[in-house]
Length: 128
Image 1 (tube, rainbow, N blue to C red):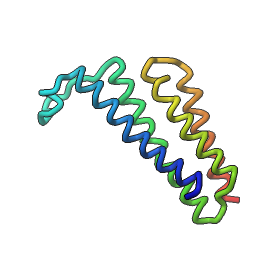
Image 2: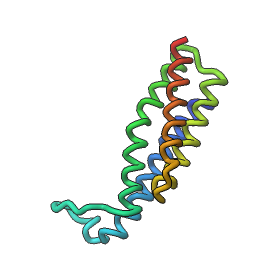
Image 3: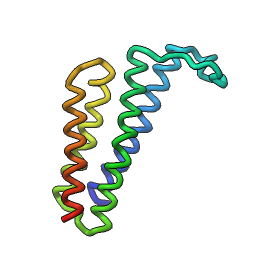
């Protein structure tokens, strides 16, 4: 398996890990009874749990773009060392983004920018 495709799987695993961590923090905040129930009344999720939820949602916004870039690069026969490196950078930046956002560290915007730039690199190479 190529590095690009392995990083695509890693990015999907990151989404699963994020939803798990967010779920644990949200359940601790809202209570097990509410979490296990139908949630007919919406309760706000705040603090670290809220930031983890937003970090997860942000990952879901970029993941389809990353996946499309990796898949198109492979289908076009353009996947190479550059797309492999960009894929690794994307995953590393997304991993870094989670604790940066969870703890309110402003560098999260830099991590987001690096991940987004990595996607752009993959697109450029795929279109070559």
